[in-house]
Length: 184
Ligand SMILES: Cc1cc2nc3c(=O)[nH]c(=O)nc-3n(C[C@H](O)[C@H](O)[C@H](O)COP(=O)(O)O)c2cc1C
Image 1 (cartoon, rainbow, N blue to C red):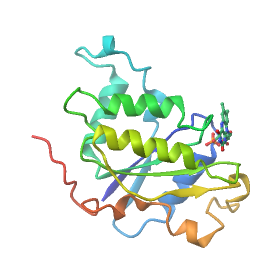
Image 2: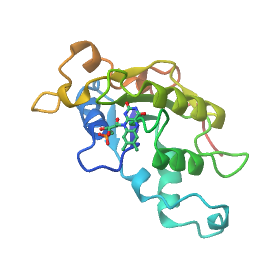
Image 3: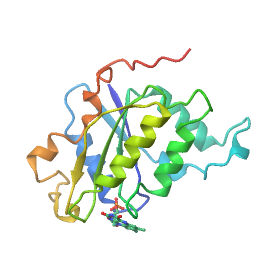
């Protein structure tokens, strides 16, 4: 099973990118996670760009979403919500209109923050938007609080309970092998 990792932060030393990397190392056999650069590469959503040929970054992103078995999002919280780049990626994933590439894809959301809340509001908002688009959202939260102190020098999560739960996407019913949503 293949999981596509999307990071809501563009920051080089992003705690959420570290969280995706930690998740990639803690997956069960047979599950792979590829942290990707799609969120950073996408242009700002503009309906005027929705003409053939689509911008290359959009075509690559759409192809990656259609090809993956599941998505794991790790995002910071900005002002009580998800980040602009992540919302932009979700808007692109909601297209084409009426046939969103994200529709039917198992999707889980995790988050890290220096605060004691672990980006919980951003996660809730991301789940709500992904659900609205038609993703098969995994109904669980993984909030990494006090994130600058949450990782070992090797990049693993110190808390064993969190470490065991970092890649919940493969737990989504229908997300444990073949993607349920097949497009013709
Ligand atoms: C514009 C902005 C708004 C922020 N708002 C919040 C917030 O609402 N809640 C929170 O926990 N942290 C907030 N933060 C702090 C981020 O959680 C922190 O910068 C975090 O390290 C960003 O994630 P990253 O390390 O993956 O880039 C905000 C940071 C910025 C730059």
